[in-house]
Length: 166
Image 1 (cartoon, rainbow, N blue to C red):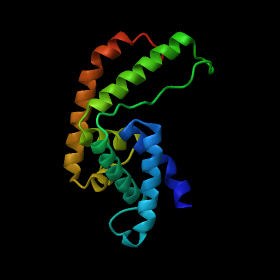
Image 2 (cartoon, helix red, strand yellow; image 1 turned 90 degrees about the vertical axis):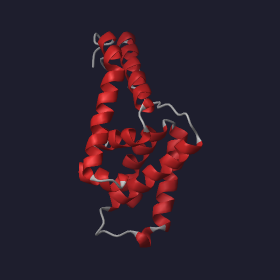
Image 3 (cartoon, rainbow, N blue to C red; image 1 turned 180 degrees about the vertical axis):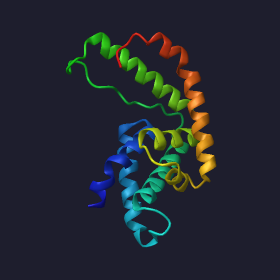
């Protein structure tokens, strides 16, 4: 029941942190195994189970990244041929995703993790602070710096691709 409730978030975090579906699947599975083994150590007073599990997942991903540098992200947009998607639209969106993946991969790990947790997982700053084990102010500054870096890295690319449909 816990796996079903949290598997999508854990896998998504692992995929975005590691950039490889195979590594993400392995890390997500390891996160659940680790959580199961350490379940007696879980304390609801310190945070929710989801936060605790995402912390385990993040730490495992950081360990994998240290062992396997460099890594690029590989998230692809919808496949061509779906409703409202011409080959040129698909190519434009694919270029946007590739540029975003490259910009995210270039961020320092702590900025990338904060950005993914805030913008993609839509977690509140307080929960991100628990996962990252830093003060809320540090989370806010990491997010600010990540956004600035992404704007700088994507500014020229976005201007070129501005003609593409969203």
